[in-house]
Image (cartoon, rainbow, N blue to C red; front, top):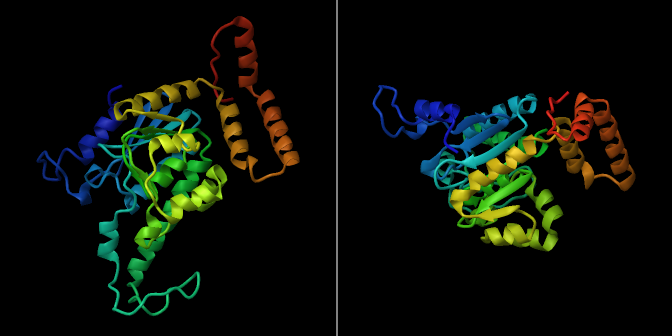
Length: 314
């Protein structure tokens, strides 16, 4: 499938033309870090910093947070695809940008004496830099949680390397389709930084303590095939097939009843944090909501008439 008009317009506005009208590559300051495309009921979000392999930045997080908030309130959008522009999905944090904003070490040993502060070993960053750093952290965490709790299902089309924050973004999605050429890794501990997106919690739930410790504490590369075997990826395909497969999956999901899908995602999200009795109660409550909807009646009528249903989310 070719690019839709929204993606083309965003690329032309953000990449193809300089402020003075000259065509060509724009500077990093002028980039549009997120491209948004609507294909019927499917919204495609493309991380768009290909010159940095789509490394995350504060403007990217800001755009993602705002767009996900709009999508959450939009019943016309049934499915979301998250992918990357160019040859990578997301290379994680932009370490060069972080290094440029980080004050130098004064030569003494750096050590942590509490969860809240680092003792005298690092020169204090200017207040403005500290605020920007905190905003970056908080927005990033909100983006991960927005993906995890978005009412619509989210498909990660991992078209290339997913490192650090990129891997954590992919793991925040409901479905993961990954290129067989991709490299996957969470190297934060080896780089003196830290994981995000609730990964210590979610990864341990999905693969067990031993495997989560291996991936987080060693920060080793793991293959798409390993991700599939561990239940972290749904499909492993050649890179050129990743987005078409994601679009096909999105089309299948979009044909389902949106109220039922929203409720199913919500119950799945809560299932492992409640006991059996509460899980039964949540399911009964969801079923009662579905049975009071117009979509419930449409499903029954379509079944009786042997035709595809037309769900309206009501």
